[in-house]
Image (tube, rainbow, N blue to C red; front, top):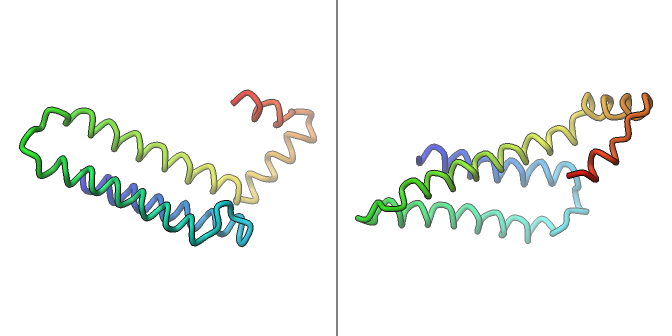
Length: 111
Protein backbone atom coordinates (compact mmCIF):
# COMPACT_ATOMS: atom_id res chain seq x y z
CA UNK A 1 0.00 0.00 0.00
CA UNK A 2 3.00 2.29 0.48
CA UNK A 3 3.64 2.15 -3.24
CA UNK A 4 0.10 3.28 -3.94
CA UNK A 5 0.56 6.22 -1.57
CA UNK A 6 3.82 7.09 -3.31
CA UNK A 7 1.90 6.93 -6.59
CA UNK A 8 -0.83 9.22 -5.24
CA UNK A 9 1.78 11.67 -3.96
CA UNK A 10 3.56 11.65 -7.31
CA UNK A 11 0.33 12.09 -9.24
CA UNK A 12 -0.68 15.07 -7.10
CA UNK A 13 2.68 16.73 -7.76
CA UNK A 14 2.46 15.94 -11.49
CA UNK A 15 -1.04 17.45 -11.59
CA UNK A 16 0.30 20.57 -9.86
CA UNK A 17 3.06 20.84 -12.47
CA UNK A 18 0.70 20.24 -15.40
CA UNK A 19 -1.75 22.81 -14.07
CA UNK A 20 1.05 25.34 -13.74
CA UNK A 21 2.19 24.58 -17.31
CA UNK A 22 -1.39 24.91 -18.58
CA UNK A 23 -2.46 28.05 -16.70
CA UNK A 24 0.79 29.71 -15.63
CA UNK A 25 0.21 32.79 -13.51
CA UNK A 26 -3.54 32.54 -14.09
CA UNK A 27 -3.84 29.47 -11.85
CA UNK A 28 -6.87 29.55 -9.60
CA UNK A 29 -5.96 29.21 -6.73
CA UNK A 30 -2.51 30.79 -7.18
CA UNK A 31 0.58 28.56 -7.23
CA UNK A 32 1.66 29.09 -3.61
CA UNK A 33 -1.80 28.40 -2.25
CA UNK A 34 -2.27 25.41 -4.54
CA UNK A 35 1.11 24.00 -3.48
CA UNK A 36 0.13 24.24 0.19
CA UNK A 37 -3.26 22.60 -0.54
CA UNK A 38 -1.58 19.76 -2.43
CA UNK A 39 1.07 19.28 0.26
CA UNK A 40 -1.66 19.12 2.90
CA UNK A 41 -3.57 16.56 0.82
CA UNK A 42 -0.48 14.38 0.52
CA UNK A 43 0.17 14.70 4.27
CA UNK A 44 -3.42 13.72 5.10
CA UNK A 45 -3.18 10.55 3.00
CA UNK A 46 0.08 9.57 4.72
CA UNK A 47 -1.25 10.40 8.21
CA UNK A 48 -4.36 8.29 7.66
CA UNK A 49 -2.24 5.44 6.33
CA UNK A 50 0.25 5.60 9.21
CA UNK A 51 -2.58 5.75 11.74
CA UNK A 52 -4.09 2.65 10.16
CA UNK A 53 -0.72 0.93 9.81
CA UNK A 54 0.21 1.31 13.49
CA UNK A 55 -3.22 0.60 14.95
CA UNK A 56 -3.85 -2.87 16.31
CA UNK A 57 -7.43 -2.96 15.07
CA UNK A 58 -7.59 -3.85 11.39
CA UNK A 59 -11.39 -3.70 11.21
CA UNK A 60 -11.35 -1.02 8.51
CA UNK A 61 -8.80 -2.64 6.22
CA UNK A 62 -11.23 -2.93 3.29
CA UNK A 63 -12.40 0.67 3.64
CA UNK A 64 -8.85 2.06 3.75
CA UNK A 65 -7.92 -0.02 0.71
CA UNK A 66 -10.98 1.22 -1.19
CA UNK A 67 -10.20 4.86 -0.32
CA UNK A 68 -6.58 4.50 -1.46
CA UNK A 69 -7.58 2.76 -4.71
CA UNK A 70 -10.27 5.33 -5.52
CA UNK A 71 -7.88 8.21 -4.79
CA UNK A 72 -5.28 6.64 -7.07
CA UNK A 73 -7.87 6.23 -9.82
CA UNK A 74 -9.17 9.81 -9.38
CA UNK A 75 -5.73 11.42 -9.53
CA UNK A 76 -4.72 9.25 -12.48
CA UNK A 77 -7.86 10.32 -14.37
CA UNK A 78 -7.19 13.98 -13.53
CA UNK A 79 -3.63 13.69 -14.82
CA UNK A 80 -4.84 12.10 -18.07
CA UNK A 81 -7.40 14.91 -18.44
CA UNK A 82 -4.71 17.58 -18.06
CA UNK A 83 -2.42 15.82 -20.52
CA UNK A 84 -5.31 15.68 -23.00
CA UNK A 85 -5.87 19.42 -22.59
CA UNK A 86 -2.19 20.14 -23.20
CA UNK A 87 -1.59 17.66 -26.01
CA UNK A 88 -1.79 19.31 -29.46
CA UNK A 89 -2.88 16.05 -31.10
CA UNK A 90 -5.99 15.86 -28.93
CA UNK A 91 -6.68 19.57 -29.44
CA UNK A 92 -6.52 18.96 -33.21
CA UNK A 93 -8.95 16.04 -32.84
CA UNK A 94 -11.41 18.29 -30.99
CA UNK A 95 -11.00 20.94 -33.67
CA UNK A 96 -11.60 18.32 -36.39
CA UNK A 97 -14.73 17.05 -34.65
CA UNK A 98 -16.09 20.59 -34.38
CA UNK A 99 -15.51 21.12 -38.11
CA UNK A 100 -17.46 17.93 -38.82
CA UNK A 101 -20.41 19.25 -36.82
CA UNK A 102 -19.94 17.39 -33.55
CA UNK A 103 -20.86 19.77 -30.75
CA UNK A 104 -18.33 19.22 -28.00
CA UNK A 105 -20.13 21.73 -25.76
CA UNK A 106 -23.16 19.43 -25.55
CA UNK A 107 -20.95 16.55 -24.48
CA UNK A 108 -19.36 18.72 -21.77
CA UNK A 109 -22.77 19.93 -20.56
CA UNK A 110 -24.01 16.36 -20.02
CA UNK A 111 -21.28 15.70 -17.47
